[in-house]
Amino acid sequence: MATASGPSRKALKQARSAQHLGQRRMEAEAQGPIATLAVAIDQLRSAIAHLPESGRAAAAARATQTIDQLRQNLTDS
Image (cartoon, rainbow, N blue to C red; front, side, top):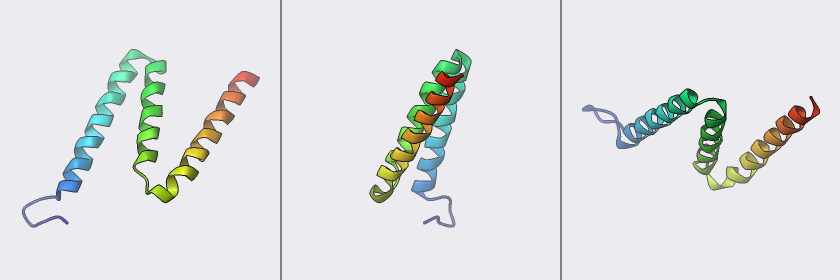
């Protein structure tokens, strides 16, 4: 819970995490699309890992399905 003196520890931690992820993404973009893809996949994996246990399996399955569809579309072209 935030106090009158400032944001909560959780909010500060989330802000630091978002800043770190944004910095990683910018560094990867400077290295090119393959590096950016690797960071994006890591960020997706992290987002799924932070979901409640009950939603992780479905989110992972959806992400896998989407990636498989994209891969199939790329190989079909």
